[in-house]
Amino acid sequence: MTKDPITSIVACNLCTGCGACAGSFPDFIKMVDDPENGRRPVVKQTRAGHEASRAAVATCAGASTNWTELPIRDEIDAAWGPVLSAWEGWATDPETRYRGSSGGAVTALSQFALSNGLASGVAHVAARSDDPRLNETVISRDAEGLRRAPGSRYAQASPAEAIHEISAGTEPVVLVGKPCDVASIHKATAADASLAARIPLTIAIFCAGAPTLVATNALLDRLSVPKNARLTELRYRGEGWPGLMQAVWQDNTGQEHTSEGISYAEGWGKILQSSRRWRCRVCADHTGAFADISVGDPWHAPPKGDTEAGQSLIVARTARGRAFIEAAMEAGFLVAEKRSRDVIAQAQPNLSATNGAVWGRRIAMRVLGLSPPEDRGQRLFSLWLGLPNKQKLQSVLGTWKRVLRDRLWRDVAITERVQ
Ligand SMILES: Cc1cc2nc3c(=O)[nH]c(=O)nc-3n(C[C@H](O)[C@H](O)[C@H](O)COP(=O)(O)OP(=O)(O)OC[C@H]3O[C@@H](n4cnc5c(N)ncnc54)[C@H](O)[C@@H]3O)c2cc1C
Ligand code: SF4
Ligand code: SF4
Image 1 (cartoon, rainbow, N blue to C red):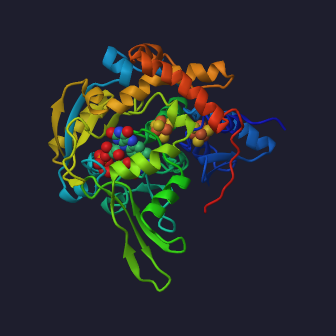
Image 2 (spheres, rainbow, N blue to C red):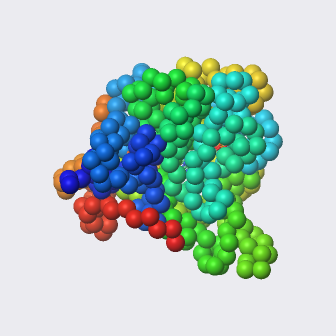
Image 3 (cartoon, protein in one colour):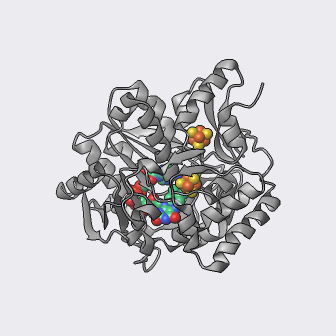
């Protein structure tokens, strides 16, 4: 049997792990946690499995997106996707702000969606209670459920798997995810009007890349969590901005221990980020161009310590997103001040540099016979031209080095192993 298209997308390093294919065809496609390669789909190798895989490609933003569908008006939109308006702000509820990754804005907007009747559920990811190193997709229907949401999980997660539950029900559901998750939801709703009617709003978090389980295990080693301990909590962000990375575990007598908390700079910079998969390094949308609303860190006004009261950068991508943000402020769920439309570039210098490098990385892939993702109509070349010459060269030469080092021409094969 020849390879089906979803298995090929995974094999060629194009899969982001969003879960849309599995959510659309749960009888034939299943997401599995592979420690090195990430949470990825595995397709049943039957005729019906291959048919499902062929149909699922329509929902897959890992392989391709179409920026010509977006209303790009100027250079700001061309670089970041549509930016209608931008604010800096935080959740009015002090606990939501405290527990949030930056200012708790995503959770505050989710709370507002449930309270104003826009949706009766919010699909988001949360740590698995049986193994908090891993994430699961849940639909929260009340404040208690949303208490599982705050705080970024710097680990693999597939919120677009929620397509299955959303399609099976009749209720409207807001979807929260990374830019790649939301881009797949955008494709799925464009192809299915009844699904579109059930997802009245999407919220994307900014994302520099999702670390693997191997990196999570390295973080637990750094936090001195014993290998045979029962992990009960693992926090990457939140409890102040940006918050400390910290674990709670039980020893074999049932006694609870709390690890030291290490800074975001150490945890992300020295342990987690190096494990990001190649797909994240050629990602052309780190800020949620296909969402109604996207939210990130306003790093241009950085926190003074590790745990000060947080702030979120909130971007309206669509008219319905902007109306919803304004209504959330009016209803007292969100406190926010308007910022200029070019604030993302000020707040995210790292992501600006990454976006600039993508064209060089993808060209280097092509020259080596590898297939990069296709983002039709996105002006990656002009972003690359804006880089200093040294970085232009690095984007190409660095890719060649990486391809050789990681032997990226080999097929990615997924095995479910949770170790
Ligand atoms: C892997 C990763 C990389 C990131 N990189 C950047 C970056 O480079 N620049 C930047 O400004 N911000 C980045 N963020 C986003 C940032 O950490 C905050 O999530 C964002 O500012 C929103 O904060 P908040 O307090 O408003 O959200 P909160 O109220 O804390 O809500 C966070 C929401 O994000 C969801 N979520 C958490 N982890 C994941 C995940 N892995 N996949 C899908 N959904 C998830 C939760 O379910 C929750 O709904 C990243 C987040 C992740 C998970
Ligand atoms: S990117 Fe998403 S839809 Fe595409 S193969 Fe991966 S999990 Fe499936
Ligand atoms: S970097 Fe891009 S592809 Fe990778 S997890 Fe983030 S949004 Fe998805």
